Amino acid sequence: MLEALPYTGPARVWHHRARRFRMAGAHRHADLEVNLCVEGSASYLIDGARVELRPGCLLFLHRGEDHLLLDESADFRMWLAVWRPALIEVLLRDGLDPAAAGQRPAVPARRQRAPAGTTILSRLIADVAAAEGPTAVSGLAYLLWRCRADFAASADAVSSAAHPVVAAAAQLVRVDPALPLAAVAAQVGLSADRLGRVFRREAGLALVDYRTRIRLDRVCAAWNPGTDLLQLALDAGFGSYSAFNRAFRQRFGRPPRDFLASAAVDDRVLR
View (cartoon, rainbow, N blue to C red):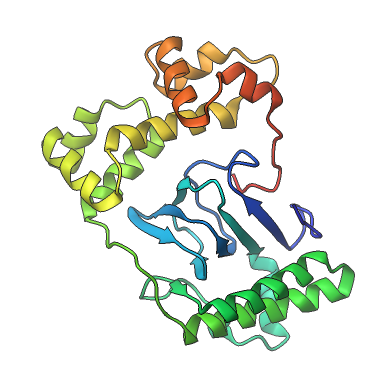
């Protein structure tokens, strides 16, 4: 895992491997984030739209976009780079093309790269991650420009447009994962069965499975040594510890107490 810039700094670059660290749940932030998939596959849910990541996929996540890493293959690897707003303002004053650091575009910011280009960009990101001091700042400015240039020159990646009720339902579940699915359906104006079919078709997973994922993420984010795991599970919406235990084992392959006690907490994850 490479990281030259701390979380408290103006930007950061690191290398993610599947399930090596606990990932954040559904979240949004003010930073500009770029993901470059180099091996394996994964999928995001971004503002209610499912986006598949394959080797060579360059993904921009803009300020305010809700996103959740749904799943990832065992061999999944990607580079992540994050620029905070203050650094982007400095780079703009120093002559960075505003188009390189602008707000989210009208079209989805997801592109596929050619294999040769992916290798070159991956090496560049690795160099920036290993740099320090003024070299790192200069490298980050160039990296942002290069990612935008490569993005503009690449073909569209495969992504699925979200039905409006999918984004609305996902937001309701994120805000309150204990909310019954019938109540979610009523608030978006559909029957529970209809919402379930639309959500599965658009997002690629059942709404009940999405809610379980959000509940598990809520527990993992709140857990600390000495906390009452049962109370965390109940607060997240699980009806009992046994229900929580089954869901946790299905997702992580280990009992929750064993996994959480031994898991390395990744402070680099955006929360």
